[in-house]
Length: 199
Ligand code: AR6
Image (cartoon, rainbow, N blue to C red; front, side):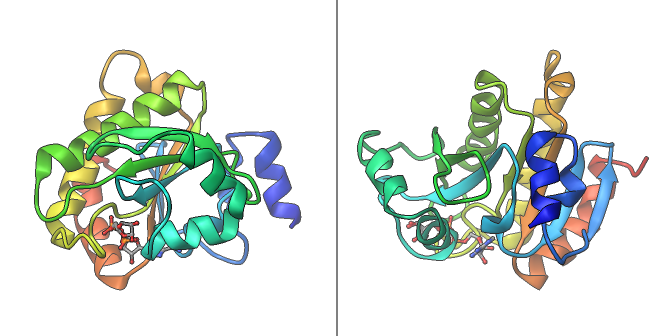
């Protein structure tokens, strides 16, 4: 669509990244947004996939991303020889509107250090590839059973920590939390203003 192509040419034009949807919350600390909807619709530099260690696809958001990206994504993932819990690997986006997919493997159950690593390693990859906009799903909170509010706090804290490290903040334009379920909207709306006061 027309809104998507605007975002594609300019990493800053992220308010155009999703068609037919309004952000739940925007402009926390000028870098953070909350959206509710399907992550596969984003035309960001990168979307993050909550993958499993095989990186070869699965259910949940992983299934949606592979379905929308098409079989070339699985073919590229095959060459990566899997990924450890808490680590992240990057591929192209293929048929997705985003340029890249950062695949990270969340912990099964409540393991905060592993979940934190997912966010930090994904953001490090973003920086390494000189990408400026990224969209995160609620890693581990679906099939992997991480309690929603605890996962939300780890996500928000780790992203803030990363932004406060060195000059990271100047290297990214926007980090979007893509929320799918109402329970996560409640959690993020509750906690985000504490960590990222509205500007
Ligand atoms: N867009 C955004 N978020 C989504 C979408 C979507 N299209 N679909 C689901 N979610 P999950 P996990 C939300 O289960 O817990 C896979 O089989 C979902 O509602 O996708 O990390 C992998 O291969 C939830 O809020 O990921 C692994 O085996 C969040 O995404 C395993 O599941 C994460 O739920 C990973 O489990």
